[in-house]
Amino acid sequence: MRIVVDYDLCESNALCMTAAPEVFEVRDDDFLYVLQDEPSEELRAKVEEAVRRCPKQAIVIEG
Image 1 (cartoon, rainbow, N blue to C red):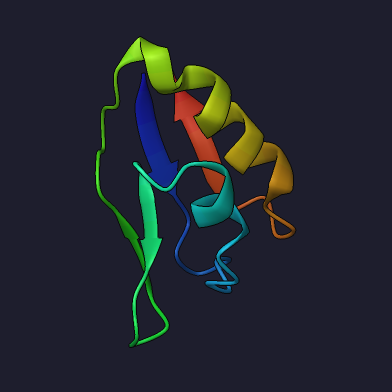
Image 2: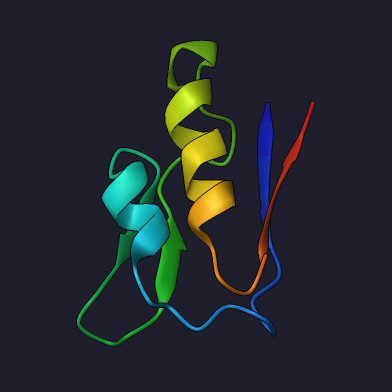
């Protein structure tokens, strides 16, 4: 599984971070950081939840 973020769409509202804090982080500079580009399969449910929560649909799972 690979995480792809469209940073042009992303508003850094941290809903993804709430769903999967192991994978996503919004820092004090108000930018989203992907902590794991290729998280393990055990995190798939959390990452899928993060994708669903994104109001701008800026996150995609490949694979």
